[in-house]
Length: 271
Image 1 (cartoon, helix red, strand yellow):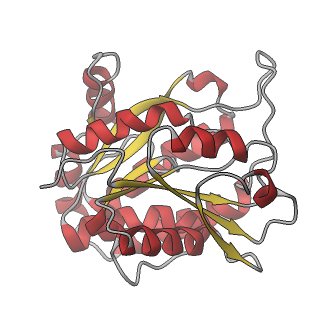
Image 2 (cartoon, one colour; image 1 turned 60 degrees about the horizontal axis):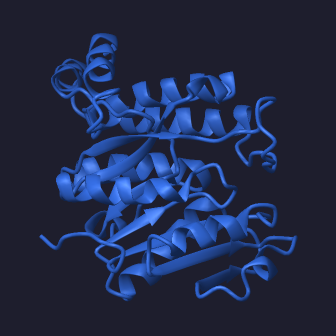
């Protein structure tokens, strides 16, 4: 299998009204990937003007189509260019571009796996409703895939080309990011490996500014939950799925040893 590096991994960045932080995000991505694709999903601000002079590929939706459509378009163009993997991150500055090499490293250690930048560091800064939603999502995704994942809702991910090439992955907006994990598990037998990262949020302890989240707790959480439950019910018997979940604790790529043993053990007990 081809070794992943900055030359064959394409960064894909969906953007919707990201004028506040998009330039820094794109400049950071260019430091770690030779090719960067930005999908502007019908922004009404000057998102594109902020990056007009940067050497990136820009895809433009005249009207908003949602994050799922943006990712599909980015995957398609990246694969047409011969990419061996696609590394996604949000355009709002929540993800640190300097974590990108760590995801690529994990992709080489675990070939064929989806790599997730798991928001495990400084979790106290994460809004409580988001943290609870993430934990419930992890539990639900486990029942749909048959294995445990740390932070299944993080948008900073590395997808192998085979996963990015999957067709007919249903779901829009945040539902798509849940479904592609399920589809990859069922169609390709792919698993996820998580890399601990710090996710940045507006905080009284920081002067950094972030735009309001596009994630709407009631609307998006109910959509994701309903979709996951439906998919889980289409899987194997409850007992067989439970046995598989228990036998497959989350994979954590953490050479420092800070999270891997304790988190995997804790989540296995919870399962």
